[in-house]
Length: 557
Image 1 (cartoon, helix red, strand yellow):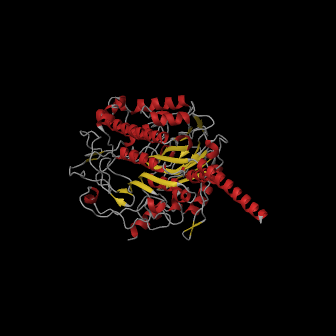
Image 2: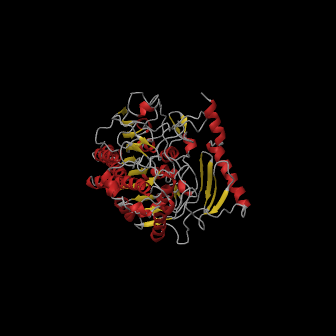
Image 3: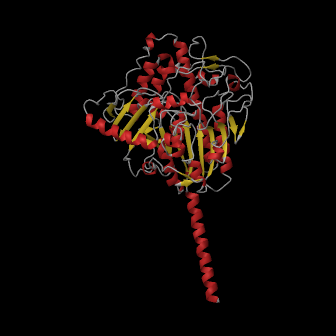
């Protein structure tokens, strides 16, 4: 009997020891804060060559790691689908945007064959929260009165793909993508639609709620995952007047001068090689000295810069909250953008652009109003190709395209005690599909093969943890892109890329990072090899010819 008691006691002590060890191991798993900007170009941060004041992101970079070759999927919805699921967007159901094209891979919302990072991490005991732009669910638009807050028409059929139903325990933000910064459409708290109060500015509200979520999570010993998806600096160009005033004179030197300064600074920072040329000015854009309406043009970029600085200020508050809660030492903070700078010239007839403010004032819409300065709630403008060309320095083309200007993003990782050389720059080639495997490694979670009775696609990316910890500077991989028929393959330093219905172009990105010298006729065998790989990938992931997608959408009721 005494021996039996001794054995039971011994097993009890061992069980207690294992429980303590397990709890200690759990507590050491890092919190993860993933911050996404919207339509921010490669060179729009101070630590990536910009004249815009971003001291908080610069500080994260100084103590963290910057990627010089990190990629998104060239547009808001597809990037968000890939970031959340670790899959290519067509696999997750968002091969284009949020409308249903009535074809597999293009239904416009997250499907049942994918899981989100939040869903996976919750199974490993993580608390999960999101603040900001969702943009991976269907939206029902009934017309301009709905956008103008003139009626209460519901903008959903159901909420099965809203954040709380896709793994997030807390949510505040907008379900749709485009919105006023002063009175956003589709604003939601949890599962409940809400109206923005007076004196509201969306960027600040995102920052406010992010700090509150961190404070709430801090009361629990479990680690957490927080996804912060800003809408800044996506159009409409709207920012508080005091922030715009700071940049009132900055851009009067013009886009050519600012672009050259950024190029020089990128070289000085070591983010591009000294031999990297600045891509030519967009052929549709005049020289600054020939540009009409210079004050109007400079103001557009001044508002854009103010929007970025306001976001940076909020990111500083998020970091301060982590420090206040004594969580900063065990939190990995990641920042990037969903696509390159956006060259769109905003139009009045676009389906998601309102015509009145929430208090009934007419909105001055579009870039034709050269007598109206952007910034206020009753003005909707975008900054156009000239300034987008600046944002994407040194690259060419923009959001929508899969040339470097559309898919290259600044990418910063801060993780105290785990960055081998704080302030360093890595040339490892990363992609938004890498966040899922990275989160799995950090959290010790298990990725499911089946969820809710549905087969789940395996992750398409690679873990970034070895790169972040300095254990490797190279990820051996081949990456693919497709959006609206624009398509690309990158394998090591070679990139095969084409615009919709255009022939393949081939570039050696090590020698020619700005894609200026097409080598497709010099290396036909490489073109055939890479295009064959693209064909295999596109069939495996459900990519359809763009004409087929549009025909199906047009003919299906």
